[in-house]
Image (cartoon, rainbow, N blue to C red; front, top):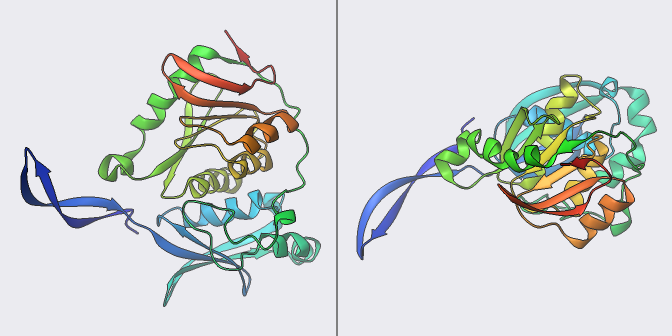
Length: 270
């Protein structure tokens, strides 16, 4: 699957036009099913679709543990896009029938807003307990993360049009990165990869996202056990409130030499 494609453009420079080819990020629909039942259709960049489906199921509360997954079948072609099928144990499917219903979307999940299509506002808030795991990260380490994330964004180098989510250790080592046209998809791909490789809950990990931090990004992080979230852009008011309620560290406008700390929770040190 291609994550970028060439499209013809007219480039203007010094008042003169010239024809050229430009690479743009691919955006295509992916339907996620639980068995034969459709769960959601998300607009995503192809690639790591198994990770995306697994992460979506975890961060939306459909599953809580990897042993509830029997398997994830590879994508199959449909008239309108691709389909990935998630298979759960009978016990998990019965026990989590309400979570599956709550995660279902009336229409589709756009690449810009993972909450679009939620059937009702009361289903947005997942049952997440405050995070108690404690560790510390030096301020200088946190401020070094955006450059490391950017250096690892291969498809962004081609297109300039993909979001990224990166998972770092408290010492600043990049453990994993995923890219997508959707911020929430990038996080789901990251969480799903950790889930499928036996690395959840993601304790003592820093999540860095390339865009803004919404409530949904914070909720997905909390569902994965991530206590420390940073972003190169701004958080929403609800994201800040959620960080405080869940005992999460939240940092915004992260740049070399500067950042805004919206909630510390005792994890940030000199």
